[in-house]
Image (tube, rainbow, N blue to C red; front, side, top):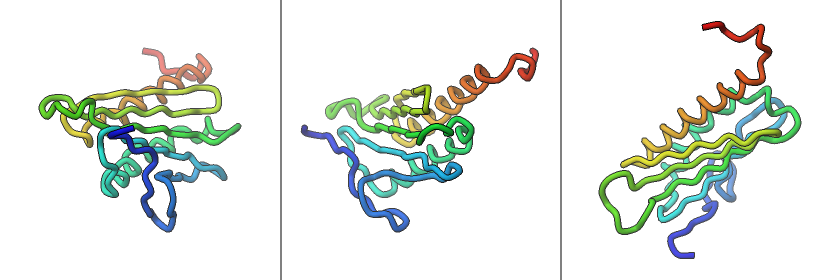
Length: 141
């Protein structure tokens, strides 16, 4: 598959292997799997993804009781021949034990697309938390 890189090997903080990052959630870890399409996964981009999307782990601690939470991230270019406009795409699927939360964004910069995906995914987590909380504890508007 031309222009397709899956889980590129990058040494990070003592871990050498495919591009999977871990964040401590009690005694478990949230794995972050990164896939790129029509784009090279540079060490700086993988660290940026780890830094920005890894902060979501603190919001899902209570949902990670039955299994390991996984974050599947795909970043890439929408096409090879376009050079202007929203050509970078970021997509994230957060797999919780009983729910999958999803966010997709396109932007002119890959870093901005990752930031927007993080914000969308955070909003999805907050909505999911609100649905699970008892009605008596919800804030009345």
